[in-house]
Length: 156
Image 1 (cartoon, rainbow, N blue to C red):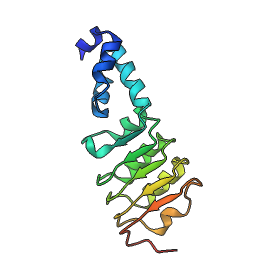
Image 2 (cartoon, rainbow, N blue to C red):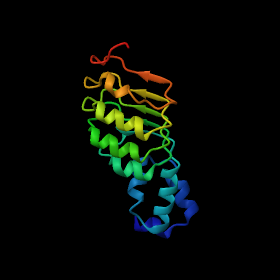
Image 3 (tube, rainbow, N blue to C red):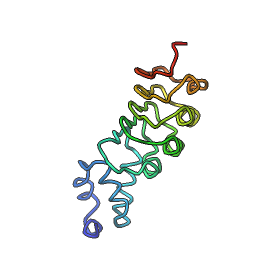
């Protein structure tokens, strides 16, 4: 990482353009110039599939990527607490995929709906702990709800 600090910013920019978010998180710990560049890219990141980055720290994700509008957390074992922390830092989130996140309950979804007021689409399919109580206070902009295989949901 120290070597990066010695390179001109334009070369760092070209070298790192193809890097994924996990590399950018690593670059945040590098020299000051590289850290600023990584921060700029992460702040502008519009979407992320977290499954592609094992071990991704969700708190760091929320802090570093406030512009995320699409977040895929499918098949991850994230808790309601993790979801609450994450969504507090992502006010611009428009689409959230939580398919097969089997640990999430109504508490986590309520936190999503209260924090992510711009949310237009959510996928909670195949989550066995999701009930009708999750959807008492959905954001006004919510247009699409995918809830296939949620056995505790009624059709009401």
